[in-house]
Image (cartoon, protein in one colour):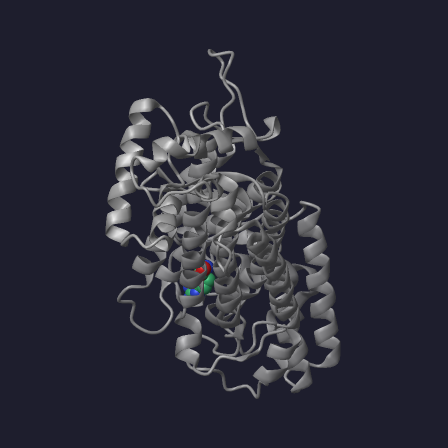
Length: 470
Ligand code: ARG
């Protein structure tokens, strides 16, 4: 056997692997990040093999001690990864054999790299999902508390980005929170399908050793062993599902980002983003740029790209394992890194948004945002809604001409448009009256916002509890 031929499969080869092909086909440059989970999987496998009598207890102990020692070496940065050894599995196995001799070679009994890699990614992704869920909880919780504090703050609500009706800032923040609630549920739903054990499927058909897959599943905290060995080694749905979750989440974060960017502008002036989340300009001394939301908005693109990569990777693949599947890792890893970074930035930043209630109120006043309230008032006084719409339209046209909001007109001026209008009209023309009147579940009234914040707190706690039980 030559130096460049892999020792674990070199037996039937008559010439060494081409140096470029070795580098081209190797996954160690990116799958090395799976080392911890690869070792956990191997320890569980060895434990199960000893339990069913395929390994002696002594062999099992030597293997486990060796693997734990290798993990410590990796963490101290002492292990040099070898391209010739292709991937994380063979790098660790070769190191084990160097350390403990012939017994190291017995670890791979009854398994293949095909079920091993499928197990590693699932273990790794499960831990990462838990980390993502924790950040998502932190962000949701921050938004809920901010919304509660801003339950009375009035701002314009928009449709078509035109001032529509007044809403409360707390209500707007809880709309964001709802998007994230759905993301959180999708994430924990995806976790269920991640948490299934492929190990034991071996290369594709199972193994002739008397393995006990329930034991391995239990040792690794999986809900159950997978049902079908062909499916077990080839399924990457869980990676696609996670990336789909991530794409929708990033779509939501990009919408929030866009609003933060708009709101922080001089033209809107609704919020202040704390300086620590912004940067300056090297040429324009007055600038404070909302880089964090802009970058999160921008990063949405690569996550959508990874979803497309994974879907296309799996398209038309015949059963069972194909080398194509090695291409699942980089998109999945980058999706994880991106999601964790964006969520961390948002969980730190979003609750620190500083509302500017005067400019929000001023903007809500400027846009005739209580026009619908005046129409509803007319309807209550017996005017048909279509007529009321027309009457208020004329009053608005007059207001534009006179540069006056409806609430700034005198009773006499208002009466010119309809004589059913009385002194009590001013109660509905105020912004406070307008938001307070939308007093039903899901409405923008301050009391409703406070109640919704409480329900959101409870729902978050329930979801977290369900997750910890899982
Ligand atoms: N590096 C491979 C992957 O990421 C591990 C499985 C390799 N199996 C094989 N038969 N070449 O998919």
